Image 1: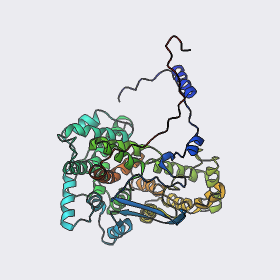
Image 2: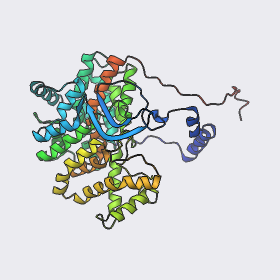
Image 3: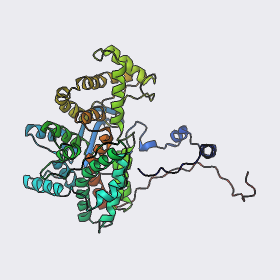
Image 4: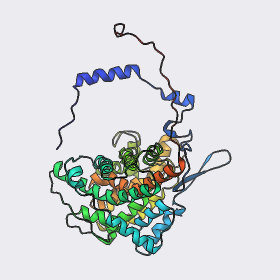
Length: 456
């Protein structure tokens, strides 16, 4: 384990914090008065229009002639194709579809069978990491957090690329395909060394197996015996599908586009996106859902009693229970109002395996939260805006059903989202061609420079 970062002593830090707080404060009301759109949000909660994209559309509402929001059932559109149609294809014809979605997001078309076959072979052949990379960049510098290790590994790949700074379309697409193929291997390798160093458990390194889908590759390299069922891999494939992209305005994708607009390299842009997704307000919510679920099942004596569940959810909102945040994790979304299509897909597809593997109580409780929370929010907060379950409500339980460690909940989100990040990066570099540069209003008070002898 690496030596710890040196920390200043408590008294010094207390003094430094007091100095900062004495000289710095921004009243949130000032933002409202000056018309600042905090979080790049309009007053009605919708996102500020910051760009154009052909990659993905996230639909959760309509606006009438006077600008009022009209809630609608949610839709997620990849390059003009509703993801519900892709899900139907996956189950009607028993196919893995994530690789098809990667092609769709990157190139804008549905691949032919020959194109898809060739593309799957390309991905499979690029899952191996560069010679010595795992030993030098992962094993010699383990991290307790897999997201940080993934971000660092992506940056390290820059040193293995002779054309790292080449911004041609050909080169960015080549880099994108290599990252999409290699990051699942990086994730599992980083997890295995984390187990050994921080958890004091055995680690297992398996070579990629030719012909496997991305979901199969993850399960085969993660599990010691490399065994998994077809149904398990299909469910993980669904998770990858619904997380593959979510428009240009979400925090991590926008981060990728901001960096890309500066003309920086692919590795810097994707590493920054991973860092953004790591934040609990963005990619880490499903882990909080699972901890919340454990808390609810611990305190609710009869999970089938709606009144008892309703009362405990009410206490969570009032900050009398749970983690004190007043949030019911897995509920609510910035765009979706009536429904999040990703949550509906995962709920439907998770049910059979949840019941088969002994997670019926957990699954049923999540369904109760989805059903009861909206009315409780309306009663407690007095808001008429619809609230629905989001994708995080069910994704964490699915990973638990699949036997995947909590360490991988957010990294799996990142693995799924890399194709979307890369598609938006290509679009930003090729078509936008202008550095993203919003404005901030200065509120500081004018002061004169004093010589050091005059300062108190």
